[in-house]
Image (tube, rainbow, N blue to C red; front, top):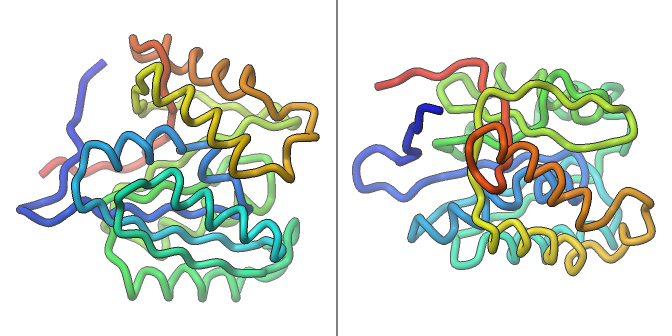
Length: 215
């Protein structure tokens, strides 16, 4: 594995854009990455944008955004586009993303993959490269019934402490999801352990990066 340090240019704080279709997407896929970045980068800036959600789920999302980015300068933007039908509101979704792009220039974007089996995730992944052309885009993965796990090419190693803290916070921040048959520590730590094996770490989160310019 070849390490590539993530650092902003000059003395500016690292700026991260976290995009999700649904409350809990970001934390399931990249919660450990956010926890680690918050610990490593004083002054970390995070803009957290969700496209769907009910009032209850938005409350969970706000609490989770704070919990997973302790000490960061955090902005949370929540939308109520129709869950499960984001392709049908393509224009509205594109407007949201282009509005974020005009207002915020992240160093790195954490967002769904264009190859995700869920239509809401997939359409966001298709639009991200058109709205953000000069940022590092890390497409994250979300375990699901569809069995669409890919072969990632970018890894973010996690310490044991961070991996277990992530699983703990997922339960704490999203009580509405605890009854789901797949939602448990074994799922989250199991995937992180497999991705850790692939990058010579105990645990890791994995992403796909299709374009990276080294400067």
